[in-house]
Length: 114
Image 1 (spheres, rainbow, N blue to C red):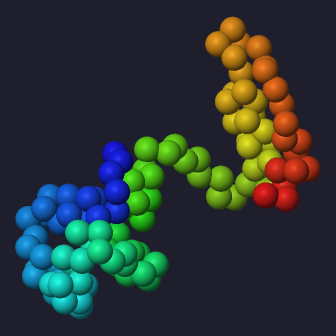
Image 2 (image 1 turned 90 degrees about the vertical axis):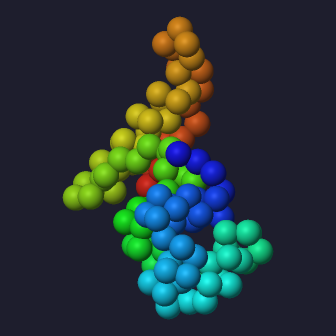
């Protein structure tokens, strides 16, 4: 999935067969507010972005068109373990088509600081 925020708000609203008025009522805002978001005249606040995502039962990343990014749940892992995973991911990204590492810039200690 991709698209801009305004496109995604409109698409999710239409997928749920909501008019702008109905959607505005759910969020306790005006129809004009929804129209402005969808026409990219105004962007919703961070707090409203969260409410919109909750209303559509999607992530804020989905609204922002970033859900094509893969995520990995590292809950419960130590900072050192997370650093090792980041290093592995970095190594995989820097591996050429022939399977050899092209470059390795990040060290585990640097990853802990991020």
